[in-house]
Length: 485
Image (cartoon, rainbow, N blue to C red; front, side, top):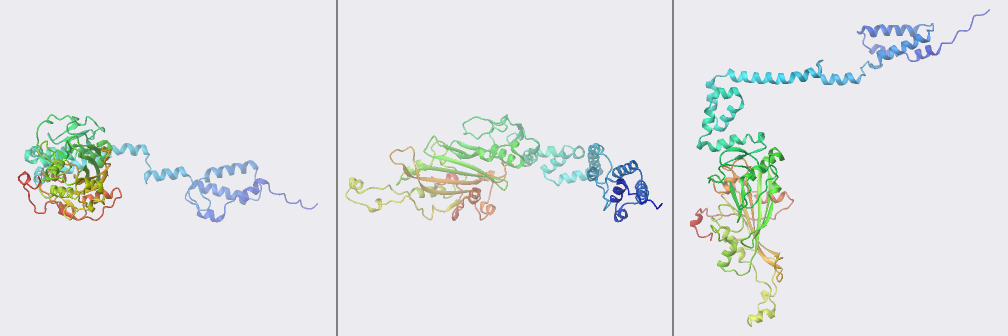
């Protein structure tokens, strides 16, 4: 009998041969792992053997292979277990658990604090006293307030120095550092202490005669030399508290104060025909103010009629429109009177002119609604002693209260002012607008005016204007002068 034909390999043997890894893959695998080398040797021996192995043995070998090498790439030998990869990224070189790391953080922070205290305590008391001596009272108080170690080193000397009346400005500066920690309180500049806000988030600017306290201060009725209010118009003032609230909200968040738009108002004066519109805007950490005041005016007013139109007769004869504390010095009132002199007479037909006499004036037959001002009252004016600018105009506007003559000429006085950063009422632009300190506006503001900065935020480009000084002769006579009246 001849030799029997060779038996075909089983399905399991053929699958094992087909799934055998390439030799290049075996060279890339690590040879240091003992379990891996043993399993690889058994696998190679299984595949090289010509004798068919039982099906159960092959199936178990394939299962072991999947369980042992499912996390390894057959081409590069890299690990494919994504959970292990994420844990490796989270540890950043440490094999400690996240719970243990979170438990260590507070102790580590305390250790750093104790290390800082040890460094502070390593210096002698004399060195710390010299540092406080050469620092300002506000900086020395801040140094003593930093830690218990510094407070014990410096003693009560910084607190005694900052409580002196001559260091009031430094005390306000030191207390202003605490604004970010006291959102429910407001710094009172009368008693130089923090009071709780009784209308948190609901503060509204009202008329001067309306009693609406924002904080409960025991010295609210006492007079003070600190300029805590700014005159806006007759019967309306702007307390510094609202400037403080607006700038706190701008620096730290809405919980610390109110928005600048909440201060905008429109009102009409009860004593005259003047109407006012105020608006506020924050630019580069400063609060800017714009007030537009206007009133209808008759043509050919005598000097007494101009005074009656411009001045309030209740009190110190201040103007009805908004102005700074230096309005008596300079040309502000003369500019307004000059603009009133340019208001033309209304149109008169030939019949109306013949009623008054036989003469006919052709100039009254064709009157233009646009009034051209002269070189004295047309340019803008800047107060040299505070950051305030003025523009006086004559406009043709509608009078809704007059059923006969709907459109009339009106004098419009626009004021722009920089109110400062709202930190302290004793220094900066706020005190300058109230006449409390000396200030050079042309050197501080520069070429670009406050008006241009304010109007640019709404996309309005003002035409080129000449900017002249409100007080070119630098006369500071106040009520002793006569040009203001």
